[in-house]
Length: 359
Image 1 (tube, rainbow, N blue to C red):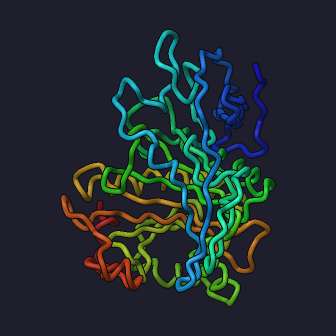
Image 2: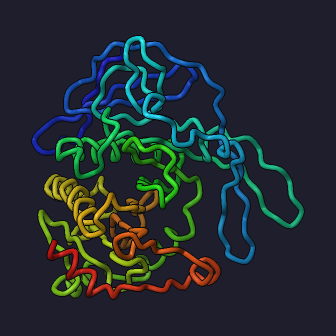
């Protein structure tokens, strides 16, 4: 049994531990919790593992997109009895987590779009190609098959943030230029596994959207000043130095950002109080969305932090993009949005802020 190591960062007055396990197929599994993980290893499966795809440059959009044909065959909405993110119980089906209990787990994705050992890309005349180097992790919020960032509770959210900081440090050290923890929630977003989970993508190249943000911050954009200006009318609340607000320039109806009032480059740069407040807001925004939309709210959420090595003026945010504009009404990204990048927003940001603030 691999012994658990204590992470340097504790949250909520509680230590966080990590236990590392190399799965039978060679992928790494990391088990995080306030208590050292000591469950006994169960049986493991040995599956074929894809090792990334390739990236190709789009000459008119100046962006790199990833091509990973093996993902077409990834697990698609399995039955509850075949949940691959559940713990492996004695005598039960084999899952991705070969232990009968855990608090929070992160493992290398079996169907990774990016991989540190990605093969050489095909040569193409007139199109630049490269192997899709990087990393893809799956973040399992707990052993429970049902739930969300609100229902998993404060302790588990704090473990999650501690685990994400640990993965940021590891993936940056392994050569990733940008790390993006994110969550897809809801069938409308295209979720194929309903067990509560998120993901982490480690990019060798900084993606175009994040590079534009880094350039804006380096050129002097002051998000802290924007938050101060926006909070009276666009704020949802503030606690522990973390502001929750609807950006005045939101692209999605009911879009919400979480950000420290004082500029920080990433969660690793935040104070303990800010991280504890961030853990609360991750659950609170999720709760309010579910009430507002009268159903589990389809949402795209991601951590936007500085690239590896830091970036001048960068201000860390967590951004929530709901895929609903009203109960039962989808916000579709149709032709204008997809072809021009110009979003049509059906709910004024100031009205969205009032609705979310009053819940």
